[in-house]
Image (cartoon, rainbow over all chains, first blue to last red; front, side):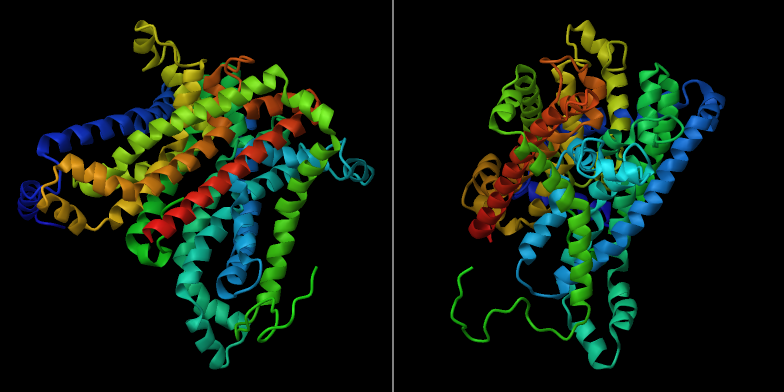
Length: 293
Length: 284
């Protein structure tokens, strides 16, 4: 920690030498920034918890204990439990292929990885409706074989996978590119096979970056609304995830109930942010300079 | 394909390497990308191509479609501009000034990334509703925010803020203090140093942040639909119109509108890449 007296002296020196703003300007700029952040970030967050507990803890708990809420929470956990590991495994595979090798078409592949971020969530859901819906090419075949994808759990999982796909891969690719291939080459030359190289050399190098990606992937998987909304069909107690349940309660004029469920999601967001900040503070170098989104 | 004369070692798909697993990982990646992303997206392209030009044009030039596009793109531009001003200011304060709680505030900037959009949507709506904490004083002044296009702008400011801050912040951290010292020594006022010395270096990052916030804002759904009021032609965003057409089982219309949005989004992506490669060339 810097000594406050030294720090003040440093600030005074900088001010005198004309490379920082005057004290008044600094305070005004800080006041504007804090007011903006307070208004747009802090106030909505405070409101969520205020509304959630506004009718007392008992109402809060009874809302969460309702069968529809329980099933929404369960579905959200199931979807994340499928989508996150899938994106973890394939994200690592993709990062390995892109970061450790030079091949033709690599730039194109890297662009494809980012694609889901530039598509509206509604369109991410729509593409699966067009693919598996009753009017689609696959629709009649699926129906004849008794397979339901849309308005059921598989559709929700697919849409979530689509939306959260980039998180792990795009976190790992720059990190693994930066680390190069020297460690792996050393391991191979010492007689390690491919799996050993990955488990004992590469994985320890990327574990914090991987955790970082998984954390963000999970937050989005549990909170995704638009894409899931299109493919879910909104069947209460069956295909409602937590964010969809929030919408239904809110539209039923049960604001307190909606905020009760929303506060769980807001809690998840806060935990995610705290862990993310912790990772950045302790393992900043090992997560690589990938702070920009 | 034309056959080119073999030069050096000839055309190679990949550079040789002792590291194993290329075939396996690339194969898995391609299979996964194809199943999850390419097939569904090409399904959309195929369905909109099957519409035919006349039908497509009829849907695209429909008054409700055009108005929704105007609202989506208009509100996203305004919100991104607001975020450019305040996001750059926030980044400056976080990078340059030292104050207690800076880390917490820095972490809070990512809240819109982490908070599910539906939660943001109902929170902002309750906040700005005519009887809300902010809505009540504002409506006393005669300003209606919730259930108007202004509400959409508010939601998109919330969603887009981290894009600008997180794009500008790392570039600001890299600025060499010596440049500013040189400017100050040569007699520049602080204002001149900022506008003439620092601003040009930050412009590409600010433009990228603007484009990212704008692109996200255009496609945003969850946080907007609660606060928008969703009146056709007045406060109905394009993603909502796609969902409305889907619920009417009007698949051709939903497909065509989605295709228009996608084309514009990809154009945006192209612009972002161009800005970035231009700035790399110019500022290294």
